[in-house]
Length: 173
Image 1: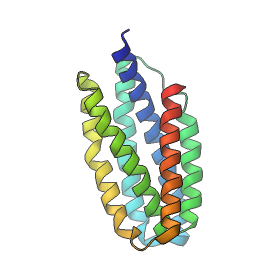
Image 2: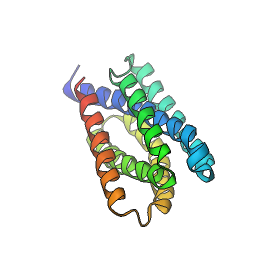
Image 3: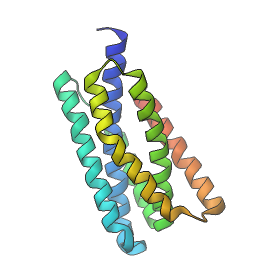
Image 4: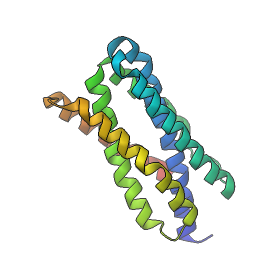
């Protein structure tokens, strides 16, 4: 197996785990938002449905390639759920800031992956299939982040850093 194939396989595994993490985030946020931000629960459910579809897309790639899931899969699930509970507890603005921060990092990585994996049609097709939804999540959540001040900058930095760290770790496990 050449280095390009190994890299592509690793990216698909990490993307699959990342989608599980996103499902965990939205599940935790939905649980808490019923009390703290009920007006966005339907939107969060729609976002979670997209993430479930994305997870299936990457699962299918892994299945076709005969690959197991990433070792970080359950870490992403548990960490995502914990992040969702905490940010859901803080209300609509924190929920939306989290979505924007995660999606900003994810979109950057996905666009880079499209360039790096241009020779792998299967990977490019999978990534391209989810890009629009991820951009939509970012853009819709941005509506609720206006006037977030210092709290918003701090939360965004922490969530962005955690997202980058989980991707970095997943690529190395």
